[in-house]
Length: 263
Image 1 (cartoon, helix red, strand yellow):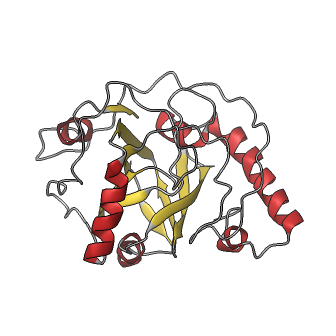
Image 2 (cartoon, helix red, strand yellow):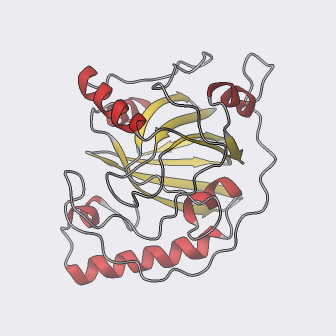
């Protein structure tokens, strides 16, 4: 992480420096958002249709195919922050010259497989050659940097109890890694009610303010972020073959009835 480091998250920085770093990150985020493809724009923009946050999302399953694709499914929701926003199942697939930086697949399994694993914060960069980098600070430990050419993001509303059920099942099972082996269908996700016809839009105007087991000190106020135009494109979804017959979108549509996705 460049700004939202473990030192920043834990409260180890002096208050003024922590606030300054947060504001610098917000300026970077707002300036970067307009240069991102729609899927990443949804994660970086605020106050726009379709924006969502992965803050404190719980990993459900994941699959890593070296040099090919990293697929990650999570249930969003952040333990009380923005309680009026319903939870979503979000599926991300990173493709094209895929790299894990300073981490291995085994590291990823360890970090995501912990019973209390969460995605805490993420930072997004535009790299030379129209490549992208997304960095995740994980709880209770771990940090992963993903470099890629393209990403597919699909999301669907889910019942409020699904996230709690997932957390309970992970705790009960000791959170053995829920990996989807390469070339196989993903395991069935936690049972969900039929998603609503409209997709919930989670708007990240600021990170949560109340400390908990993974959030040691309150986050500084965000203030008013710069306006970011809404993404208006996103019908082109990159293909990820399933037996050479179906795209990733078609496959995930079968898993998540009623899902809406943007590329």
